Image 1 (spheres, one colour):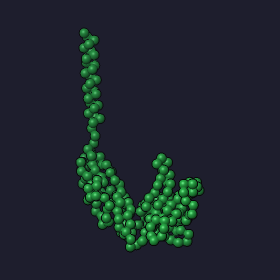
Image 2: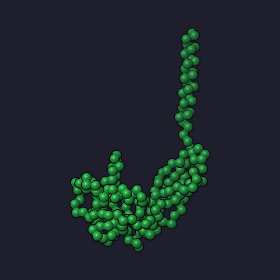
Image 3: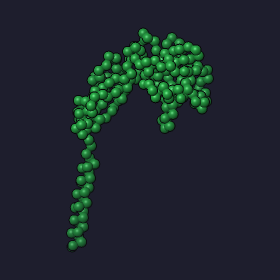
Image 4: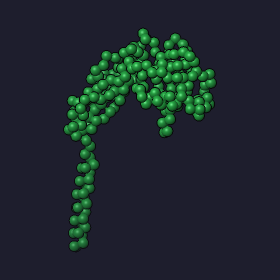
Length: 210
């Protein structure tokens, strides 16, 4: 599990859309802390603090939330952003307890050399760049490494190929990466159009001669 990083928050009593808009105008992001033995706790987090946190740490880093003089360990469960401006809108935290499994998304990180298929002229397609896992907090990886070095054209890398000790919540046949052959249709069409142009010109010349 990644190291714990402190993140200062404030509890809040005002909820709803108008309260959320007011918080954003004040440089805060509305958040909710779920989990543990307590009811959901509305919070607010400084926008700059969260940006700095995400800039230097993976999203599944355990955060020590400083809330009104108490510390509660949690991870980011979901971060909502505006679809156009990409401005952060809302944040959900999941409180963690050492002996209780948690479910989170973990990024996939490619290692090794370029895939064989890419070296042979193919194109690597990333179908999924993260997977949902379930494990104890102490076993949560920052990322799952995948070695695509031997992946060739028309081959796929699936959940079954992952080398990890945590439980991945997806069917074994789920495709994560694949190598596809380069598309050559445009080149074929271009050649065909060129041939048609030459024939058209020849026909025009013959008609003129007549």
